[in-house]
Image (cartoon, rainbow, N blue to C red):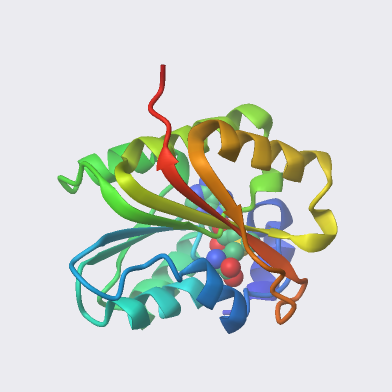
Length: 193
Ligand SMILES: C[S@@+](CC[C@H](N)C(=O)[O-])C[C@H]1O[C@@H](n2cnc3c(N)ncnc32)[C@H](O)[C@@H]1O
Protein backbone atom coordinates (compact mmCIF):
# COMPACT_ATOMS: atom_id res chain seq x y z
CA UNK A 1 0.00 0.00 0.00
CA UNK A 2 1.45 3.31 -1.04
CA UNK A 3 1.91 6.37 1.15
CA UNK A 4 1.21 8.56 -1.88
CA UNK A 5 -2.11 6.75 -2.50
CA UNK A 6 -3.19 7.41 1.08
CA UNK A 7 -2.19 11.06 0.63
CA UNK A 8 -4.41 11.29 -2.45
CA UNK A 9 -7.29 9.66 -0.54
CA UNK A 10 -7.02 12.00 2.45
CA UNK A 11 -4.48 14.81 1.97
CA UNK A 12 -5.39 16.69 5.17
CA UNK A 13 -4.87 13.71 7.47
CA UNK A 14 -1.80 12.19 5.81
CA UNK A 15 -0.36 15.66 5.07
CA UNK A 16 2.87 14.52 3.37
CA UNK A 17 3.54 12.99 -0.04
CA UNK A 18 6.36 10.76 1.16
CA UNK A 19 7.32 9.05 4.42
CA UNK A 20 10.00 10.65 6.58
CA UNK A 21 13.60 9.69 5.80
CA UNK A 22 15.85 7.52 7.98
CA UNK A 23 17.89 10.67 8.73
CA UNK A 24 14.84 12.46 10.16
CA UNK A 25 13.76 9.29 11.96
CA UNK A 26 17.17 9.12 13.66
CA UNK A 27 16.87 12.65 15.09
CA UNK A 28 13.18 12.31 16.07
CA UNK A 29 13.77 9.01 17.90
CA UNK A 30 17.13 9.89 19.52
CA UNK A 31 15.19 10.45 22.78
CA UNK A 32 14.34 6.73 23.07
CA UNK A 33 16.74 5.38 25.72
CA UNK A 34 19.03 2.50 24.76
CA UNK A 35 18.87 1.23 28.37
CA UNK A 36 16.10 0.24 30.80
CA UNK A 37 12.49 -0.61 29.95
CA UNK A 38 10.92 2.61 28.71
CA UNK A 39 7.30 3.07 27.64
CA UNK A 40 7.39 4.70 24.20
CA UNK A 41 4.30 6.06 22.44
CA UNK A 42 4.31 6.95 18.77
CA UNK A 43 1.54 9.12 17.30
CA UNK A 44 0.73 9.05 13.58
CA UNK A 45 3.25 6.36 12.54
CA UNK A 46 2.01 6.11 8.92
CA UNK A 47 4.07 3.48 7.10
CA UNK A 48 6.54 3.32 9.99
CA UNK A 49 9.84 5.16 9.44
CA UNK A 50 9.92 6.21 13.12
CA UNK A 51 8.55 2.81 14.17
CA UNK A 52 11.58 1.08 12.64
CA UNK A 53 14.02 3.45 14.38
CA UNK A 54 12.24 3.09 17.76
CA UNK A 55 12.26 -0.71 17.47
CA UNK A 56 15.94 -0.67 16.62
CA UNK A 57 16.74 1.49 19.69
CA UNK A 58 14.54 -0.59 22.03
CA UNK A 59 16.04 -3.87 20.81
CA UNK A 60 13.34 -5.93 22.55
CA UNK A 61 13.18 -3.86 25.78
CA UNK A 62 10.30 -1.79 27.12
CA UNK A 63 6.94 -1.17 25.53
CA UNK A 64 6.08 0.48 22.20
CA UNK A 65 2.56 1.69 21.38
CA UNK A 66 1.72 3.24 18.02
CA UNK A 67 -1.55 5.22 17.66
CA UNK A 68 -2.66 5.60 14.03
CA UNK A 69 -5.98 6.93 12.73
CA UNK A 70 -5.76 5.37 9.25
CA UNK A 71 -6.82 1.69 9.51
CA UNK A 72 -4.84 0.66 6.40
CA UNK A 73 -1.61 2.11 7.79
CA UNK A 74 -2.37 0.53 11.17
CA UNK A 75 -2.95 -2.91 9.70
CA UNK A 76 0.21 -2.77 7.61
CA UNK A 77 2.23 -1.62 10.61
CA UNK A 78 0.88 -4.35 12.91
CA UNK A 79 1.84 -7.00 10.35
CA UNK A 80 5.31 -5.59 9.81
CA UNK A 81 6.10 -4.95 13.49
CA UNK A 82 4.47 -7.67 15.65
CA UNK A 83 6.31 -6.39 18.74
CA UNK A 84 4.53 -3.03 18.49
CA UNK A 85 1.11 -2.55 20.10
CA UNK A 86 -0.62 -0.82 17.17
CA UNK A 87 -3.85 0.97 18.12
CA UNK A 88 -6.24 2.21 15.44
CA UNK A 89 -7.43 5.37 17.16
CA UNK A 90 -7.37 9.15 17.20
CA UNK A 91 -4.35 10.51 19.07
CA UNK A 92 -6.78 12.90 20.77
CA UNK A 93 -7.86 9.93 22.89
CA UNK A 94 -4.32 9.06 24.02
CA UNK A 95 -5.14 9.24 27.74
CA UNK A 96 -7.97 6.72 27.34
CA UNK A 97 -5.84 4.41 25.13
CA UNK A 98 -3.14 4.29 27.82
CA UNK A 99 -5.61 3.99 30.69
CA UNK A 100 -7.17 0.99 28.91
CA UNK A 101 -3.74 -0.65 29.05
CA UNK A 102 -3.08 0.25 32.66
CA UNK A 103 -0.35 2.74 31.70
CA UNK A 104 -0.28 5.96 33.74
CA UNK A 105 2.90 7.58 32.46
CA UNK A 106 5.05 7.22 29.40
CA UNK A 107 8.76 7.97 29.13
CA UNK A 108 8.84 9.08 25.50
CA UNK A 109 6.24 10.35 23.04
CA UNK A 110 7.28 10.65 19.40
CA UNK A 111 4.92 12.39 17.00
CA UNK A 112 4.48 12.19 13.25
CA UNK A 113 1.13 14.02 13.47
CA UNK A 114 0.27 16.67 10.85
CA UNK A 115 -0.04 19.63 13.24
CA UNK A 116 -0.83 22.14 10.51
CA UNK A 117 -3.95 20.13 9.60
CA UNK A 118 -5.45 20.61 13.07
CA UNK A 119 -7.44 23.60 14.26
CA UNK A 120 -6.03 25.62 17.15
CA UNK A 121 -8.25 24.01 19.76
CA UNK A 122 -7.63 20.47 18.48
CA UNK A 123 -3.88 21.10 18.39
CA UNK A 124 -3.93 22.49 21.95
CA UNK A 125 -5.98 19.57 23.25
CA UNK A 126 -3.66 17.01 21.66
CA UNK A 127 -0.55 18.68 23.08
CA UNK A 128 -2.14 18.91 26.53
CA UNK A 129 -2.99 15.21 26.21
CA UNK A 130 0.67 14.45 25.44
CA UNK A 131 1.96 16.59 28.33
CA UNK A 132 -0.52 14.88 30.68
CA UNK A 133 0.67 11.35 29.93
CA UNK A 134 4.39 12.11 30.14
CA UNK A 135 6.08 11.56 33.48
CA UNK A 136 8.10 14.50 34.93
CA UNK A 137 11.23 13.17 33.20
CA UNK A 138 9.38 12.36 30.01
CA UNK A 139 10.33 13.75 26.63
CA UNK A 140 8.29 14.61 23.56
CA UNK A 141 9.60 15.02 20.02
CA UNK A 142 7.88 16.25 16.92
CA UNK A 143 9.01 17.77 13.64
CA UNK A 144 8.21 20.70 11.34
CA UNK A 145 9.14 21.39 7.74
CA UNK A 146 11.74 24.13 7.34
CA UNK A 147 9.99 25.90 4.45
CA UNK A 148 6.86 26.33 6.58
CA UNK A 149 8.67 27.18 9.81
CA UNK A 150 7.39 30.76 10.00
CA UNK A 151 3.86 30.06 8.76
CA UNK A 152 1.07 30.88 11.26
CA UNK A 153 0.26 27.19 12.04
CA UNK A 154 3.95 26.38 12.64
CA UNK A 155 4.42 29.43 14.89
CA UNK A 156 1.29 28.45 16.78
CA UNK A 157 2.70 24.95 17.28
CA UNK A 158 5.95 26.32 18.72
CA UNK A 159 4.05 28.69 21.03
CA UNK A 160 1.86 25.80 22.20
CA UNK A 161 4.90 23.62 22.86
CA UNK A 162 6.59 26.39 24.86
CA UNK A 163 3.49 26.90 26.96
CA UNK A 164 3.38 23.19 27.87
CA UNK A 165 7.07 22.31 28.25
CA UNK A 166 9.75 23.98 30.34
CA UNK A 167 12.40 23.25 27.68
CA UNK A 168 11.95 23.15 23.90
CA UNK A 169 15.18 22.56 21.96
CA UNK A 170 15.15 22.96 18.18
CA UNK A 171 17.45 20.60 16.28
CA UNK A 172 19.73 21.35 13.38
CA UNK A 173 18.05 21.22 9.98
CA UNK A 174 17.75 17.67 8.65
CA UNK A 175 18.49 18.30 4.98
CA UNK A 176 18.25 14.62 4.06
CA UNK A 177 14.45 14.63 4.16
CA UNK A 178 11.86 15.65 1.56
CA UNK A 179 11.18 18.40 2.41
CA UNK A 180 13.98 19.34 4.88
CA UNK A 181 12.77 19.37 8.46
CA UNK A 182 13.72 20.26 12.01
CA UNK A 183 12.85 18.56 15.24
CA UNK A 184 11.45 20.00 18.47
CA UNK A 185 12.68 18.17 21.58
CA UNK A 186 10.43 19.05 24.52
CA UNK A 187 11.24 18.22 28.16
CA UNK A 188 9.74 18.82 31.61
CA UNK A 189 6.01 19.06 30.95
CA UNK A 190 4.47 21.98 32.86
CA UNK A 191 1.63 20.72 35.07
CA UNK A 192 -1.76 22.34 34.30
CA UNK A 193 -2.65 25.22 36.71
C1 LIG B 1 2.69 13.34 7.90
S1 LIG B 1 2.16 11.64 8.09
C2 LIG B 1 3.62 11.05 8.99
C3 LIG B 1 3.78 9.57 8.94
C4 LIG B 1 5.10 9.06 9.52
N1 LIG B 1 5.23 9.34 10.94
C5 LIG B 1 6.27 9.68 8.77
O1 LIG B 1 6.94 10.55 9.36
O2 LIG B 1 6.48 9.32 7.62
C6 LIG B 1 0.91 11.84 9.36
C7 LIG B 1 0.35 10.55 9.94
O3 LIG B 1 -0.51 10.88 11.04
C8 LIG B 1 -1.73 10.12 10.95
N2 LIG B 1 -2.75 10.91 11.65
C9 LIG B 1 -3.34 12.07 11.25
N3 LIG B 1 -4.20 12.51 12.19
C10 LIG B 1 -4.15 11.60 13.22
C11 LIG B 1 -4.80 11.52 14.48
N4 LIG B 1 -5.66 12.45 14.88
N5 LIG B 1 -4.51 10.47 15.29
C12 LIG B 1 -3.62 9.51 14.90
N6 LIG B 1 -2.97 9.54 13.70
C13 LIG B 1 -3.23 10.57 12.88
C14 LIG B 1 -1.95 10.00 9.44
O4 LIG B 1 -2.84 8.95 9.13
C15 LIG B 1 -0.52 9.75 8.97
O5 LIG B 1 -0.19 8.39 9.07
